Image 1 (cartoon, helix red, strand yellow):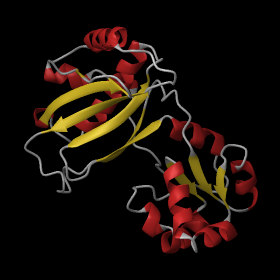
Image 2 (cartoon, helix red, strand yellow; image 1 turned 180 degrees about the vertical axis):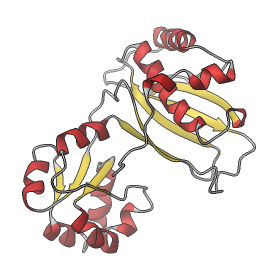
Image 3 (tube, helix red, strand yellow; image 1 turned 90 degrees about the horizontal axis):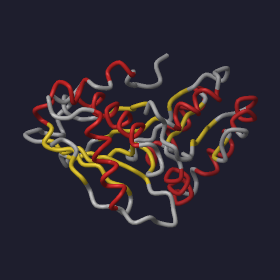
Image 4 (cartoon, helix red, strand yellow; image 1 turned 90 degrees about the vertical axis):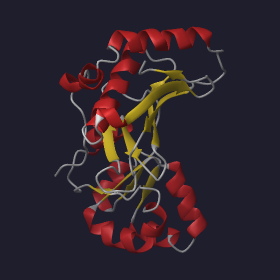
Amino acid sequence: MTIFRSCSLPYLLVWFGRRNMMEKGEIIKRIEELSAKTKKRRFKQSAEISINFKDLNMESAENKLNLNILLPKGRNKEVNIGIFADGDMNVRAKKLSKFVLNKKELEEYSKKRRKMRKFADLCYWFIAQPELMPIIGRTWGIILGPRGKMPQPVPATADLDAIVERLKNTVRIRSKKNPTVNVPVGTEDMKPEDLAENILAVMNGIERQIPPDKIRSVYFKTTMSRAIRLDR
């Protein structure tokens, strides 16, 4: 069973290489320049890129992005994983996440939509025991579906540790009507080299679906910094 779509390291330089635009070293240089000019905050800022497209109907099936990209250098940030499971899987899940519900709890939550919404917003990813998927679809689908967070089914005997660890370092790319997507690529305290590798992994994943000449621009920023353009 394939749970994720991800990019391997050999493809990291494909995007900028094909477009003849920038090398990894240039990305590193620009990140370093931004860091030197950015005021330090009392919290760890997230880092993200904004990819802007041109001449594309983002609502058409061929252009609509629905990707999960594994960041080769990780997110460097704690990510909440929601797990729906019963029995032994439930016991193991509670050692890995604070957001674990069994069948009875799923049904109880479904009676209080506000409670479901809050739970859904607290978690970045969801996984579930396959046997619980019919209940989840019937009761939680109205909340999780529009958020793009329907659980990925995971067998009760699966290695939860490995799955959760991989999810924590995987980012979602979901496009809407606007020709722009924002993607987290790490945090400000990561090495510029590591941020560059994550950026290239994201861009390679996108370019597998969207032609390079349909990408108008790519910007990088941290939570409180200005944005810098990477593609020129």
